[in-house]
Amino acid sequence: MTDRPLKIGITCYPVPGGSGILATELGAKLAERGHEIHFISHALPYRLERFGVPMYFHEVETPTYPLFKYPPYTLSLASKMIEVAQQFHLDILHAHYAIPHAIAAYLAQQSLGPGGPKTVCTLHGTDITLVGSDRSFFEITRFSIDAVDAVTTVSEYLKNKTISVFGTQRPLEVIRNFVDTSRFYPRPEGECRSRFAEPGERVVTHLSNFRPVKNVTGVIQMFAHLRRRMPAKLLLIGDGPQTAEAFALAQSLGVAGDVKFLGNREDVDQILCAADVFLLPSNFEAFGLAALEAMACGIPVVASRVGGVPELIEDCVNGFLIGPDEYKEGGDRLYQILTDPATATRLRGAGLKSVRERFTAEAVVPLYEDVYRKIMAM
Ligand code: GMT
Image (cartoon, rainbow, N blue to C red; front, side, top):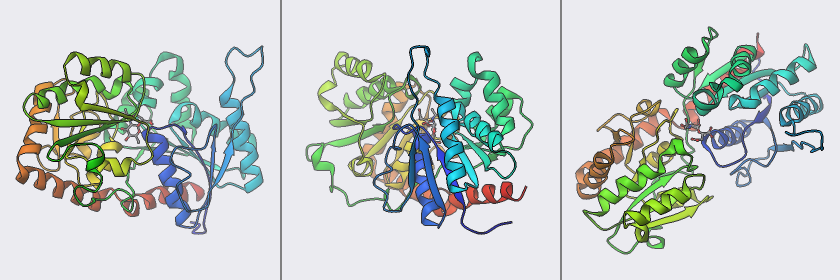
């Protein structure tokens, strides 16, 4: 097996979202470990610019032409992958999120023939549960999962789901999300809280892309239950299709004055540290990277008992699990954390311990390197 540094092309969605963030962090950590990293995407990946380590970015441009009702991004992407692989002698093309990245990587590989790069696809969640299992994408997603050289999933839950949805018999390797603990770590209390809340007021935080699967209306409902019992502020980090609905609901429940819509932010680590509790009541979550980031900051988490979340959070041990529509229970758990310091301290300590033991870059990035080396030796 080769142990020389590898040349790796990474493709991901460059917009705010767990798969793109994980792919970008992975690229940076691989670059720190001496590998040559090339991002291939239609825009500079979210959060990429802040990394000190040198990485390449190759922009995919998809021309519009009156004949094309839909600009063929997948083909432009595959073409760019071929160009970059030829020019830089890439060893690996790593596609994050199956659609359309995995099939583009496979096309590039086939076009390059023997001696071309090996292909890896990391499945992140909605590529399987929502998009991949939509009939219009089903067959090509099933094909690409079987066609690439290696597939990883971000949780055991997602691995089993992939097998049950697509009936694949190929090996799927579970590599869970990791967090950069040099960026997400507990800060002294109060360092950033005064930016958002009055002295003595408690802070609940939520971070997501505000898609329906994130259940932002559930966040508002749970916060409203809490707010009836004590003064508090809710910080919402992110933006997306449910923002307007969440705002309207906050108004109708009479809590809009205590809900701050902060939009998409780069300083997520700073804002998380202003929180007393983090809330993620998603309808589905393949893993729950946002909850992991909060735990790494020492913030107790209340999250939903769905998908791969229980692989990160053990109920009452390092966080609380609730049902996505258990608004009162969610509000009660928030209240418990905010009013019972012993519980908050216990959850915080256990959360930090889980992060240290299982979810650091040092623990997880070598697992991706093992996958690369294994397929390079094939
Ligand atoms: O959560 C989102 O909608 C974003 C999504 C993505 O693909 O960008 O995140 C998914 O990937 C993350 C990183 O692996 C996981 O931690 C999230 O749980 C997963 N989201 C869902 O499954 C809904």
